[in-house]
Amino acid sequence: MTYARARLWLGISNVGFFVVLAAVLLGIGSGPEIISMLGLAAASPLTAFAALLACYITLSIPGDVVGGLILPWRFGRSTSTFGRFFMAWLRGVITQFAVMLAAGMVLITAGSFFGAVGFVGAAGLMMLTFLQFQLPLARLVARLLDYPALPTDLAPAMGDQSFVAVESNDPGFVGGFAGLPGTETLVIPANWIRVLTPQELDIQLQRRLALRTTGTRTRGLAVGLGWNLIGLIVCTYATGAAVNTVAGIVSISLCFTLWSFVGLLLLPTISRRGVYEADRHVLQNGIRRDDLEAVIRKLDRLQEDEPVRPNGVETIFHPVPSVENRLRVTMQPNLGRGAYHAVRMALPLSWCCLGLLSRAVHCNCGRPSVWVMLPGD
Image (cartoon, rainbow, N blue to C red; front, side, top):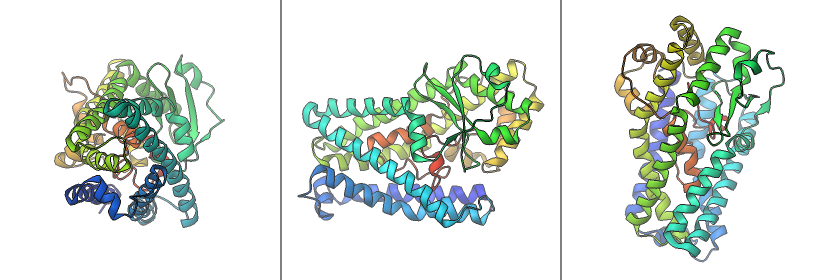
């Protein structure tokens, strides 16, 4: 059992638990019955949402401990003590609790005044706000500190792109673009500056800039946000739930969790195409294939170190292709356009929709550093 495969089985178990839980609760009865079972029928909306989120956090603890502490220990990926893990986890869950509690109150208020249209509209505005303030939120969830010792030639290489290098205690943190298109900041993990040669760092930065140049990053945002909005509309009308009550929003949240699960199955394919698109772009613009391969292999070892994986496993579970597939497929003609990180943008944005799968997946379970900015390539 490799580290990558152990994390995959953890993700399957964790996601499966919340999906089955959502399906069972929806099968048991309506939102009011669920609220009554929990003894929250007479509680205020704020109290009820807080209690429900506390239950969600409690149910997430086993997966978080296994994914953030036990597996990294078992496979030599971390030397963190339980105390350091606990404090990092506590910081993350408190921030997520606060954001989701605020989202719940905004949703119920919008639903009370403007009905289903206001309910969905409020969720859309919150997701756009989430995107714009993704980096500050990531700093709140995880202790991401600015890295001051930037190479002197980094700024010229970045051109007009706003960027910042941050220090993370998670070697799998890869940063990425944060912010709405046109105002985005490129977040660079300080670990890259230490482990990559200047040439390798330049190649990886050129590849990141290719995500913006090709438009695949913007398409990924649009697909992730659109998937969540469509899901919220579908779940609102499928459940027939009242959007001005906690009970109604609970029903929608459970249904939306099932919708998110469908997204985990469908969106990885278009996400992988976004990776291929960026790889192909830099190869067509002067990067040697051998040099790109060296960077891809080195960064893969920092994450799950799985250069080869079965096609069936990758198709269903992995929005980032394996090293061997990247090297093979990128050289093929007519790859088509992709939507970079569509699935891994839909997940953190689902905080605004009260979905339950945002940090249950294999790549970020128990790792607060990558709850807001999920791992990538």
